[in-house]
Figure 1 (spheres, protein in one colour):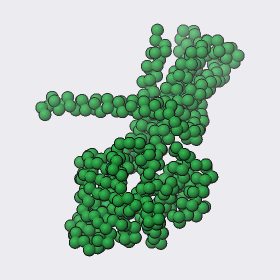
Figure 2 (tube, chains in turn red, brown; figure 1 turned 90 degrees about the horizontal axis):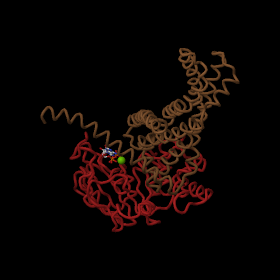
Figure 3 (cartoon, chains in turn brown, purple; figure 1 turned 135 degrees about the vertical axis):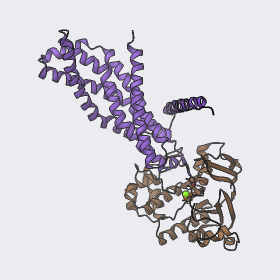
Figure 4 (tube, chains in turn orange, blue; figure 1 turned 180 degrees about the vertical axis):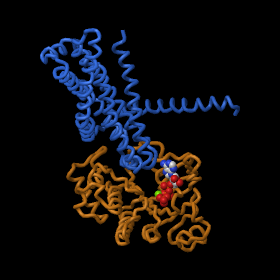
Length: 248
Length: 261
Ligand SMILES: Nc1ncnc2c1ncn2[C@@H]1O[C@H](COP(=O)(O)OP(=O)(O)OP(=O)(O)O)[C@@H](O)[C@H]1O
Ligand SMILES: [Mg+2]
């Protein structure tokens, strides 16, 4: 279980997170929605410690994330970055197997490669992609390699920053199903950022909407349509008029 | 604020900023040194860095040295002839190359070639979140990116300097025998007789220091790159400028240390 309480973060005068309170139960899928630039990616990075919050506490299973063995903490996580963040000096399979071939118990190269090829297959990429370099892939393919890398070491907690952006509808469906499957079958705790409402419905147990630096609304996905929160309503129906300004 | 106070503040601010930067760079360099001795060691990354920094810098260092040695011979001949001391050309060329021009010009060329490419590469990794990705994959970016490059630069610069010295002396010899009527064998004998081990050794030590400076500045500016292409551009520029200035400053200090009476 991940708990955030009163997490705040500003970049200079830009106050991005103004006191976030959120609970992500174990083995559940939380989807974060919210307008572009509201701080969703920053929120994930705060939990991972890539961005240091100005105030507030974040705990994982009751323990403060800023204390304790950082390597052991990070070993429990997988992260898909919004831009893929593939290492462009390494081949696709080396990217996917990065964690497997390093760290405290590295796997032999052949085993790591076999796992990488299998993970690539699960995100809809054939074995021929394994030996290419990231620069030789399309944007959507890079995204999926990033996804394969995030799940490669079978982490307990996985963060997906916009996993289906840039994918065709069929591939988006495959990825949605994959994320759902990982949560249901392997008991992974997932936190997904997405703008795609069909993804939200396919992936989420719970939904949280970030707006104005706070969690504007959170609840089970089944309650999302029924809520009378005007912000959520405007967002899920994609209306131009409503409380959320369209110029920001 | 009163006008004099505002004036003083405008003087003080850049000074404080500069001091803060010096502090940060020193801490950064110290952290790298701390990581060098502790595992894990990234052997493959070290090998690649050695190739990129050492091997591929050979042509530019060699070309710099040969032209410099040649020009040096012409100038020393011109200067020496004013005192009827043309015969000093071989030894002064050798001492000048080994003590000063080999390490300094080699260092500056490597700064231009290597500090820029390290800063651009690491800066791009920073702005495309590859450094964040390394951290989430339990890999310390200092160990994985900075240590192999710093180690490779520090170890390969003395070799580059040695090669540069030899080629520079060759350049002087070529000019000496083709343009200045020196006898080939006499020129070489003169070079060997008057060149002392410490002339060369001090230059190699300088080379190691300059290599360290180059790689540390490349890594520091890359890792602190601001966001976007503009950020990477600025990081690259800062890496080359700061590495070059630091090389010249360090050269003066080392020369004081090694040779002041
Ligand atoms: N390292 C940083 N330095 C300065 N400002 C930053 C940094 N990272 C994020 N920001 C700012 O924080 C705000 C939120 O950024 P973030 O990337 O979290 O948005 P987002 O909600 O993920 O948007 P999108 O849906 O477009 O990805 C933006 O205004 C951005 O400019
Ligand atoms: Mg984002």
